[in-house]
Image (cartoon, rainbow, N blue to C red; front, side, top):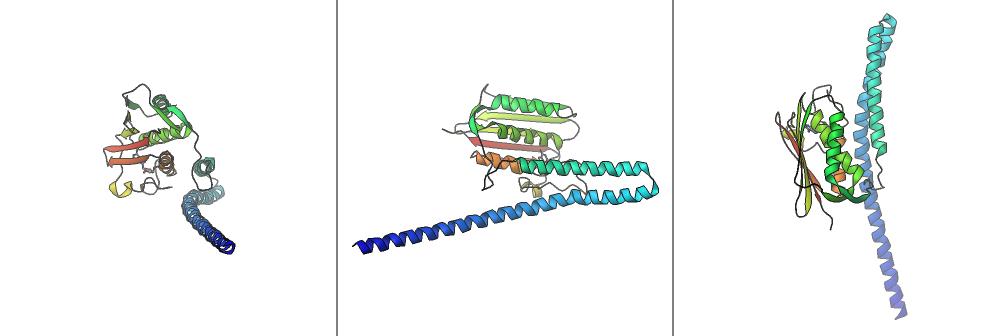
Length: 259
Ligand code: ADP
């Protein structure tokens, strides 16, 4: 009897260890895949400014020989701008406090979304020279949600910044905040340039930017929406976008209320 029990125990222990090993290997593989796609994207995104700076330096070398101060100055400015862009990108990637499974570390507590959104609108208004008309529609004076305050602020300001960036000279934005039975709903609608149907499914991908000729006139890293999506999903929510070229875009996020 004792011997049988011992064999069964040994067997289950062995199976258990084996399963654990399998699980670890699978997790490592997933991590490796994630890391690989991250590195691939990152490499592409880093190469562009490096190539620009390289070309600018070669131009400067030519203009030094010709003693053309004006051109030298111009290409130094271009290099400086590109390096600042690179620096901001590196900061942004390093800043994120993520755990070993690439999830952002959240600190949730009860927050009121009404002042959070109102403050983000004011910050966005101050941060741009474009004239902006905002409409902030909310039925309630308070809208409480258990969430990470600083990441939620970033989410709202990312969406507002995009609405401004991808609008023309005059900006019209409608922000809606509603409470449903099970979730809260936040929408940010602009009357900007819109997104073509073929690109819309990629805008939440890391480093994806809708192609716009050779030089993107609007600065960005293509990280904002990927970040927004991850934060929203880590709160158990979802984000979607409806857009029409020339008419504008509406980003709507839903976050369930925790019981
Ligand atoms: P970034 O703005 O830094 O390029 P995002 O991840 O925030 O990166 O957005 C990805 C792309 O989606 C942008 O490059 C832009 O082409 C498109 N996009 C995002 N928001 C809007 C918007 N409100 N209107 C039009 N296009 C947008």
